[in-house]
Length: 511
Picture (cartoon, rainbow, N blue to C red):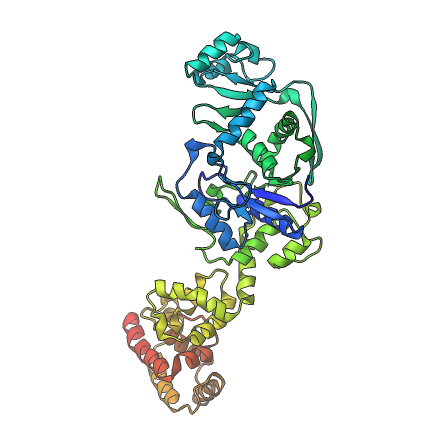
C-alpha cells in the first residue's frame, strides 16, 4: 500500500445529498488534509433505474459551498479516471470475467418471478451455498445449457460464490476487529447483463483498488457489506492493498429512535439537505441550509461534532482547527442525535463573529428580494445596520425582519403594541416630540438621547410609555436596537416623517 493517504467520497446521483452524506464527506476531507493526502469524488451511478437528473451537479455545488475541496473527480480530473462508474464498463467486464474464470463467481439465469416464488416457498430464503444448487445457474446447469442460454441472449446476473464456514475479520478504526462467519452471507449479485453494469459491491472494490484508495470512510449502514468486500479483495489477490475500513456512527432523529430522515426535517422544521432541492419528477421543493440562512462554516462545525469531539470542551472550531485535531480515536461508536437547535446556535455564533462588511454582502440579496434598491444605500450603511441587529438573529434570513425599518418606513403597526402603548394622549405628545427633535443640535445617538430624556423628565411624562410610542411610530413595533441608534441611522428628516405618519395612521387604526 502506498504511504500517501487517499480517500474517496462516492455518492450516488439518486437525489439530493443528505446531511449525513455531507458529514461522511467532511470526515474524509479532514482525515485526508490532516495526513497530507488526497480526496477523490467518485460518482457511483451503477443503479441506472434510480438516476435523477441534476443530482450530480447538486453534489458538486453542495461540496463547493461547504468548502470541501476535491482533488480528483468528474470535474477535477485526475490520472485514475473516469470517475463516473457508468463510464467504466469495460474495466468492470474484465474483472467480472476474471472472477468467473477463477471459479469465484458464476452466472445465474433466475427470473424475478422464479426468485419471488422461491421466497414464498422458503421463509427467509437466501441465495447461498445451501440453495444455489436448486436454482438456475452455471453451477447447477450443464456447460452446454449455460452456453446455449448465453448464446440466445438470456438475461443473467453474475453472483459471487461465497464459501460457508469461514470467519471473516474486518478491522475498523472505530469499531476495532469485527468477525463475521461467511455462512450468514448470501451470494451477492456483482453484475447485471440487463444494463451491462456492476452492482455497488464489485464496482467500489475494483475502483478503490485501481484508484489506490488507502482508507474507506463511510456510514455505519455499509458495515454489513464489509465482510463481502474483504472476500472480494482476497478473490482478486489484493489483500495486501486492501484499504483500512472506517464505519461512521449514524445521525439519529432529534427525538425518538432511528436514522435521521427528510420526514424528520419536514416534521420539525429544519433542512436535511445542504442546498435547496427541486425534485425534477414531483416538482417538490425541499429546503436547504444555504437558502435557510446558514453560513457554511457553521454547518461544517456543527456536523463535525456530531459523532466526534476534540477531546476537550471546545465547540467553536474553524476548518483549519478541525483538520489539525481530527482523530478517529475520538469518534463515537454509537449514533449521534441531530440537535437542530444546536445547529442554530452554531450559526448565531458564526454570524456574530463574521465581519459586518462580509455579512452586509450576504444581506444584499435578501434586501433586493424584499424590493429594496441596494444602490440607494452605501456599503458602510448596510454594514452598520447589520452590526446593530446581528446579535438578534440565528439565520441570515432573520436579518430582514430585524432590520427592515432601516430601509423601509413602516406602513403597518403591531396591533398588540398599539393596544398596550398608544394612549389617548400620545398623538399630542408625539407632536411635541417632533418639535423637540427639530431643535436637537446634534442628532447623533447620545446627544439626541440626552435632549429627549431631559424633555420627558421636564414634562413629567411616563418614560416607558413615551419611548415605546416613539419606537412604534419609527419601527412599527416595540422592539429593535437602541432607539437613538436607529434615529441616528435614518436621520432627522426621516425620523420626523415617520413620527408624523405614525400619528396619523395609528390614530386611524385605533379609531
